[in-house]
Amino acid sequence: MFNGLIEGVGEVVGLDEIPKGWRVAVGTDVASELELGESIAVNGVCLTVVETAAGRFDAEVSPETVRVTSLGKLAVGGVVNLERSMRADTRVGGHFVQGHVDATGIIEGIAHEAEFHRVVVGFPAKLARLFVMRGSIAVDGISLTVASLERSRFEVQIIPFTWGHTNLSRSRVGDIVNLECDIIGKYVLRALEFGDFRLPDSAASTEDQHG
Image (cartoon, rainbow, N blue to C red):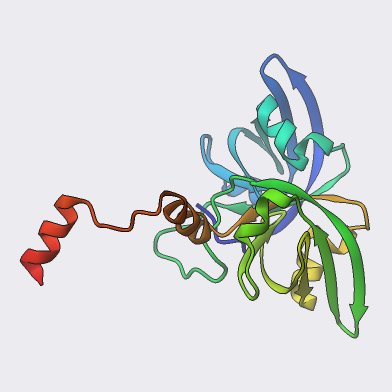
């Protein structure tokens, strides 16, 4: 579990094909604090650290992850957003992010307003029901707020700190980004699809006892 607050950026320093997918090496100062088996979000995708060395870590990427995320577009020299898994004793400054990408989107526009930046992202129709105005969205792992919303695109406003401390400042129109919608909205939609909001018998009995 993550909260969409990027700890830093890293540089892809190695990318190799392996029998079960890809192995990516990322150079970062965070590497010295990582342990084997630890989860880390790379551009919003939850990966597992399989090796650490001086100033870098390695993670393996499955063929399915390559297919459904932007990680299949990585190249040596590319810059990625990094976030270690959230501690249970820390404040949640962003929103709950699982690192499970729902789909990729495309940057359709970037506008600069004084020190702020507005980014327009197009998204696939299947995600439309999961977007709400002023709701949360993770873009390449960054917790952002939907500032405007249309049928197949949304807009976010980026503050100077976020612009300077993530890979957004290197983004260009046409770039592919990873999108993860708010998990709370997913549960609400799932409940609506079934149309049955009654508590399970065990939960109802417990509620009666304490009511």
